[in-house]
Amino acid sequence: MKWHKRILSMIQERQDKKVALAVDTSSNEAPAILINNIVKLFETVKPDTILVQADFKIRSIAPIKSDTIKYYTHGKSSYTLVLEWAKEEQIDTLFYITDVTGFMPEDIEQVDFEMFWLVSGTFMPKIPFGKAIKVA
Image (cartoon, rainbow, N blue to C red; front, side):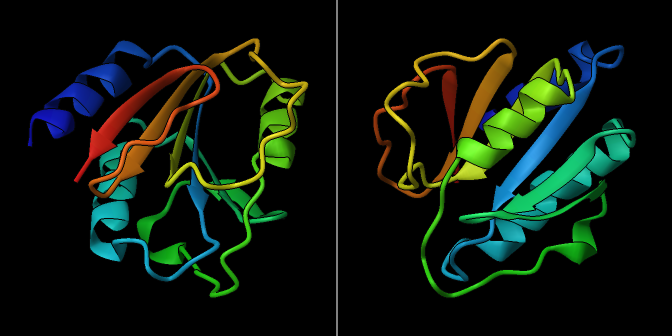
């Protein structure tokens, strides 16, 4: 649970920042209990976090609530719209729960906000920018 303490302190350090948590909903193979626990952590520690549910499109943008995640089974995901939304909304820090296998346009090599990829599972793919945190 080392990652749990790390994320907790990261959330606490960003109390005065505009924070969003994106969840990749492209597959129901994701560890739903793990994802719900991460969402609950944000909901408890920083209740003004914005929850973004997305796969190949943004499905919802709402105040954070752990019992609202809806998964799809098509397996297609793209990070483009969420990253563009975060830039437009002037998000300070974006946390993204994903396996990092979605589409990433080659022209996006960095973003103007702090980016953390929360990656579950045993495989840690190469991330295009930001920092990866293995959660499992």
